[in-house]
Length: 430
Image 1 (cartoon, helix red, strand yellow):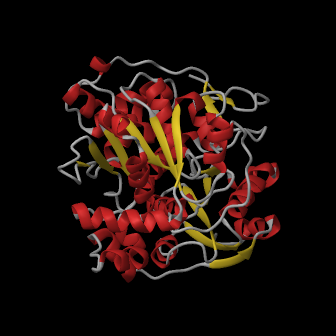
Image 2 (cartoon, one colour; image 1 turned 135 degrees about the vertical axis):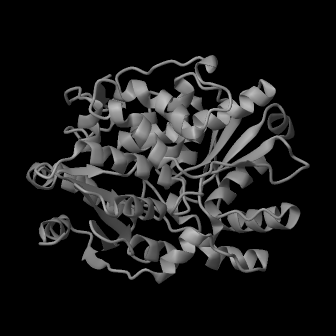
């Protein structure tokens, strides 16, 4: 399988080359030149996530150095639970796919752990890899955790000053070598622009072996297909109906992974996107016109994106698979967190609450015609300062998150300027 750029002005490359590059030389994002198709009986009933992921991803890495290590990579990366829970017995057709049981309490653990295990497979001391990751919240924590102790790859994490929760910031800045955290005077889109500018500087990029662990990297999206595949197979086999998906999204990575899984033959029904108050995607779906704009800060800060990078992948490939986009503002997020807890006892993070609100807005017939799976993307403790006042009780962190408070932190402040990022990359010891 080869990978091509969404902009069509770059050579086709292998999976390893696409992972190492992150972004195509023409500035586009990589996509497979063809997709495998799976029948439902290709996957054994009740298969665990790791072997299912290995089978699903095998065609995407066939003929590369990753292929012989793929099963071991999946076994190591996906070594935590993937529960489907029913929060409300009165609504058995609504289930939450809890994606936050990895070591940093967010769905980004799936892609980051897979990607860094791939990098350790393909990198060498004489040919190292530097992962440059812009984050609006959870990506950086997952990347830092996955990179800590890596042999031949390092991670440099950029995050927007004053735009993420206190716990998220601590989780970005607590990882040991080879991880560095840069706090940028700007919003997420400014961080993302810095990353793209660094990739466009071919001398800088070559000097450090720059690549990405954001969802602009195809290596982040492919493993995220696996949990959509497993959940949809489990639900379909239980009732012979393709479940609909409701996915909180900002940069469209998780959503596009679901689109890819459906295009490969997995039993996925309509896909509904839930965004926060950033209106780019909801306006696009309502009007057919895509107009990126500056992001605005919200409670669901990991989705504070005004120019979602993965729209470039979705456009012309899978936009017809998006059934609806619901825009959920902060007032509705607060309301849904409180109502969900009061009525069912379920505690949702602000991002998960956008999807719960989108489900509540479906008309009764649509809700009842099929099962619906909501992506529960982050542990609510990561947003305790917003969630606790709404539910009237304190949250207890899982052990992995509790341990974050005991780790020392280190961070460097920079302006949103490409030369400052370049200086940090070149600094000795970085």
